[in-house]
Image (cartoon, rainbow over all chains, first blue to last red):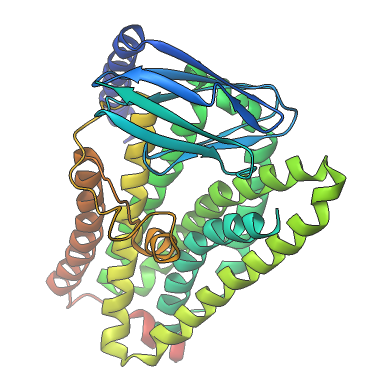
Length: 114
Length: 271
């Protein structure tokens, strides 16, 4: 049974990974830092209808959770670590995000310009 | 920190509480022993601890999207386990009881591992900041208390229905949990760029905001999303269908082989 399934699963995984690899190359990289429970920069400006590879660098020793209802994104970033979050393509507008663990200070937004 | 902690822990607990309550109702209605739940909860706590302790390493897998891949795998696994459970339940065979128990234990373990890991990471981070410890832990206790209470209320609420309806309601709830899991898993794989982004289907954010109390409750109950993508909606529908079809297949199988020497679960347990 497992032998039978091995091949299709392998093919599926290879197909998925090549799909991913192509997209990584295509998506522009945007950096976001977390320091003292604040986001730097607070406002990220990105073009409309473009998928973005957001690299979040947590410079705090404490973990943070990047969260945005508008972007439909949620991800824990352990202390002193990096994480990648893909966002978009988005329509022009403002998309707030926040740090779920320290929401009082950790606030920011993505501004999509036409 | 206090209120934030209440909301955060409550959110995480609600999802697992819903699953545990529904499975416990199935257990009760079929006269099975509920001991499995302790095993599931214990294994879930251990799983959450292992997951949270290794989160930093896991996050760096697959070019920094390991967290999404592991979480989505757990969510898809829960969907499949619930489908297998629905099938076994549909057949009504005592012979399949151990399969049902395995499915219930593993699905609770996986669910709790995911939700619990986030709680552990949050609390561990707070522990390094002495002034925050007290309000956070108090908030966490209250959040967990409310979450568990909702689960208990749901359990007794469901048992209050006539027997025929209990099974039907539980099956529907199980189907929405499965739909929610596969939808969330799909969203995570999109976030990781393993699945392509698809068009947003609708925006009900002005009617029910996701960060409002009804929004949070609906999210925990039926996986409410104000702006779902096409792929998410498809995954949600697929999850629901999978449970209903599995249950139907189980029943059909039972009807087809009714003459065999199989005994319904209820009879063996009650005799």
